[in-house]
Length: 252
Image (tube, rainbow, N blue to C red):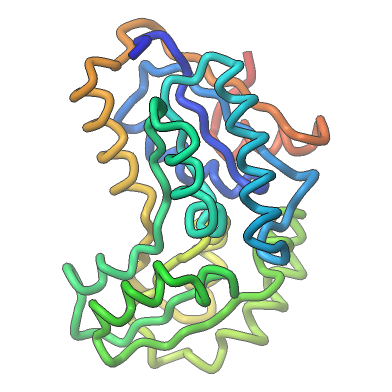
């Protein structure tokens, strides 16, 4: 593995920046290329075949940009396309985000849990296998149709109105919240305003640790100064600006 190669990360928008933040904590010296596919956002309303075609095109581009490993920072794409991509590109390691429901089983099994995710994730075979295996029998499922789109647009009022409409009913009941979409960690404060102090679970920290393990095992860790590049499929300046703002960085 080329040590100086980039870690490619893609999502249907900028939600995957929440994954990148966790990765940077454990791999600060790596070179990154983040690809925001705003042109095809959202993925959740597309067929499995279309999602695979979209992801395949992105992966080809990331490989052309010298990516040594690829992170799928979108739950829908992970559920629908990762097996296909691993089969087509066996020489490239893929690391895919997953809903963090097992973490509830490991750390807070006896507490009432709300799973917030897109409808596509809720209906996926992967998630339902997780739910069946680790069900704490105190779990409420909430398909958050349209929430990721509102977060992507950055419309604070729309986000607050949405949460008041759909999660107010869980106030005083829920102690755990599984964030099953990479956009949702961006609105943890807004969720807590309604539900009160809850424990959040998302798959990004474990993904970051797993990614580091893969790079260590393959002797692929970069030892130089890391750089972060950003691309958007529509070349939207506002996406770039928001990306670096969320990361808390000034673009080079």
